[in-house]
Image (cartoon, rainbow, N blue to C red; front, side):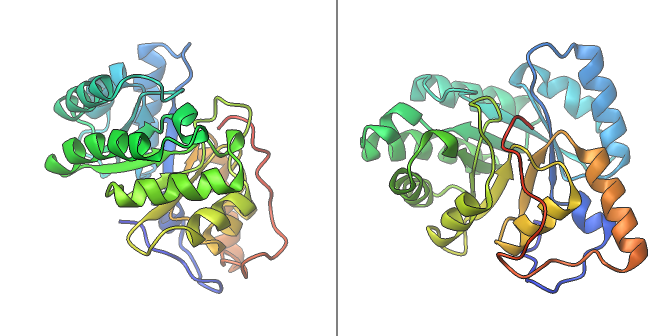
Length: 255
């Protein structure tokens, strides 16, 4: 499990790689493109490749022999499929070789205040995931929520036993922001981790997210992040800043 890095912590390049869930979720990606990317990314020993459900078997085969895991998305990208469908999708993904599930919360019901329905939906996926030893992350889609709804989503995810709360799908016109991850970290207990997804494309932004307690990054900019990490490590400056310090800023668009 990736560590929480306190301000002032010096990271290694492998520490940065261990934060990364590389997103391969665009609908136009071909099987050949997904497989080639998974093989290349596994060579960097990143934490996981996050692929579409139909690509899990392919991805598991491509990363075999490496420490890189396979993550997939459930109810993606809108979260409005039925709980029964999310459970079935989760079971299939786990059977196919996924070890982490990023499920999208039912956004409309969260915004509508139907919090028990939201929690029950999450619980059903968490039960399936945990029975198979998989981690479950709950995507809130923070760009579509006000602060009270973000807090309510975090609390529902924690009550349901989720392992992470996650900012965004990357498909709703907004992504991770420092204020949102700060709010998410403040709204959950220590057993729940925070994943920032969307717009984290440079090492300064990644480090700023770490300062706020983020322990996983969803991105398609892995090469840029690792290049930046190597440069900073060589200079002795791959260090987590103080929380709220000036740094990179996620642009909030896509991955």
